Length: 326
Ligand code: UDP
Ligand code: MG
Picture 1 (cartoon, rainbow, N blue to C red):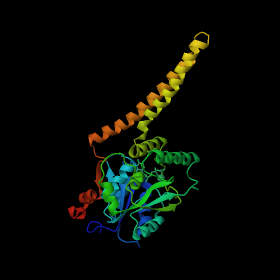
Picture 2 (picture 1 turned 135 degrees about the vertical axis):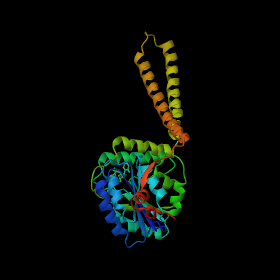
Picture 3 (picture 1 turned 30 degrees about the horizontal axis):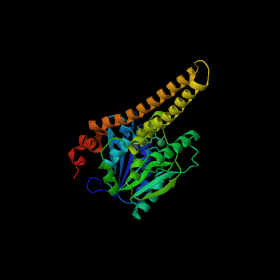
Picture 4 (picture 1 turned 90 degrees about the vertical axis):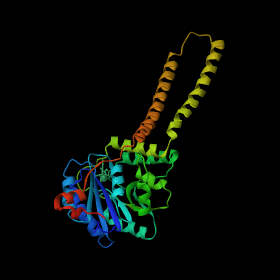
């Protein structure tokens, strides 16, 4: 079915060590999609080390189930990118494989798309008890920062759970570059967004892969992808320290003439050195962050490497006709 004609819908699900979720998710999606139209389900195995790939191979005997398997872990955002690339549907739904993005919400997204929305995004409601207060606070502060310095407004609670029209998918897959931050990118495109609130579902199996480190990395990518203003911190710091320095000069001149006392001020000099040193390192670090990204872009390496897809599996198992694609 999916090989002969493009389906109406593609559901794309990045999966990193989600072996236990593949079969139940497939069942859930198939029952949700049954009345909506023709569809394909595309799992992107992002370098899983558990039985995820085996589960996908087994599931893909069903012609509606496809998969793309990376050679190693390239990250959630790259998995989304690959899914968008492989999806053939006229509308593409992106969602997590772990049931935290409830499949039952898909009909709502589809309704809005049928009413003409090009991009339907979702927003996690705030009374979400599964997220720690700390995570909620940092995410709120982060989006406020991005709002101030970046070129996009991303409301807190925004998830990579969305529906994109074919036109938007083609625009995104046509973009080059490594710093993928999908929830910013879809807003940057400028199409009107339709937002659907949702309550986060319960993770079915396994654990979250987003450690503190990965979250910080994603946060930095988000800033680098949508703002160059941090580079200007150097200018602001320079201005601030120059004015403090000017006051110090005035003070030392005045005290030279009018305050008769021996040399003091060791601690203020140490403080100045320490503060200036820290400020310089900070700015160097920020510059380094951007320079590193420029280097990565100039290498023009692919964003991910595909090891196998459902077409390879079918070709190796049942002769070429199975994997034939027009
Ligand atoms: N994921 C991925 N690659 C990764 C990390 C996560 O494809 O390197 C997938 C994961 O399998 C899940 C989705 O991205 O389907 C969201 O990840 P997770 O549930 O670990 O994050 P959280 O929901 O805790 O933010
Ligand atoms: Mg999750």
